[in-house]
Length: 535
Ligand SMILES: Cc1cc2nc3c(=O)[nH]c(=O)nc-3n(C[C@H](O)[C@H](O)[C@H](O)COP(=O)(O)OP(=O)(O)OC[C@H]3O[C@@H](n4cnc5c(N)ncnc54)[C@H](O)[C@@H]3O)c2cc1C
Image 1 (cartoon, rainbow, N blue to C red):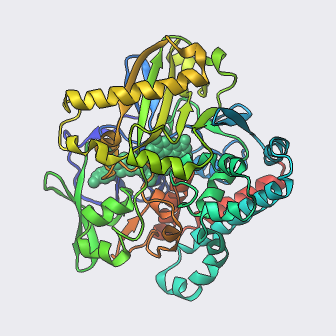
Image 2: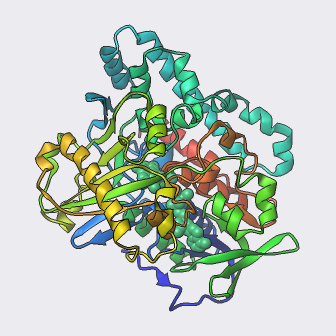
């Protein structure tokens, strides 16, 4: 278990090669790759625990993940993401494959399964939707075309500005054929069957933006990501920081928690360090922000930089969410019929239900996601015998909780607690419907609100996934590692896409721009070589 230093007790000195603001997977990945190239890295995390959305927290004998329930494309030893994870963790991070059915979608009471393997999923859908065979084939055709076009688009983000000016548009051309269209537009061009559209877009919660607003590109990337099945980190998501942060230390660097950066120090258009909340200045040759584009451009940098790149304003923030963390004094695996996640929807029209709920918090929840983390981790039972965890997630408006935004954590008063309790009871009903055997067995539950996301991850409005994934987002020229400020860089989900995989690739892109080492090409080559050798 990696133990980071606390900024309260340890004040770093000297000039670092790189300071990274935020220890999300993007920041950790960039930090690991830079450390392996000899850079002395200082990773600064405002929370009391590292990892960003990969961190876990404990209550009694239970432990929960915050922002990782399943990830795709790591089940095969030669997959790009698996190889990149190996690179940043020196092969010490391991994955456990989920059950064949990784997602179970329930729409208006009818269940649909998402089985591992594109051919299995296609065959299943064709059986459930007779007469829609051609639409289903064309849908998967477009999923692959859009997701594959993303590679060139993201590679272009590492090019110097003058090269981008010359060939940037060309490299993004194919990707924009898909990213400029909404998910709904594309699906409505394939079929009139509303239930089928509801099922095919049922994973929209993974990117947080309903079909009429989301770019088809993010839909395609997320769907393709999971086609080979889901996986979960062995030992839970805190294993991610436990496997990466020692590499930064080995390279002479440090990770500090409780270390909140107030702003980036810029002299004559060049970033030279950061000012901490206590006024101390820490210096480095390169400054990287993993704090999300919104916070970076509205709080960490002088406002004129944000105005120049169109933040805030050009792209909305993603919605905020509620998470109900549940503890049970029993191994619940026998009740589950596999460890797949549930996605529960009242109707197939996700846009309409999201809109109705946004206007009235007492309307039916537009989506309910249920995950069973303890049943996904092969090491859980050793560490937590006869205990189980469940997590239930849905959307919520920040405004519903705004009146308590300045109150201290755990001191927000009775009215706030009563609101939380009301939401918790409503959410528990979905669990009992999905797994009736769990009724009466809950020993513990705690609800996190958008205020928790704001406090622990510093997303200003408790946004679940940073910037929203609309078509406009993928047209923003400045969501890339290098910025207009010399020696100042961005990393994390906003420059690639939501998801552990997206933010991880962002970390590699940022390290690539700083070191000049072409990680993406190297990993792609490794992948091809392994495939040739049949590994
Ligand atoms: C509820 C939920 C469920 C999710 N489920 C999944 C899933 O199942 N699979 C999947 O692939 N993805 C999932 N995601 C998405 C995934 O977790 C994120 O896309 C990804 O982790 C974002 O990583 P990041 O590198 O952008 O940084 P983040 O994880 O967002 O971390 C940013 C860090 O910066 C720190 N910070 C901010 N400001 C400062 C400051 N001023 N000074 C110091 N530190 C600062 C924050 O405290 C935070 O730790 C989920 C997310 C959420 C919220």
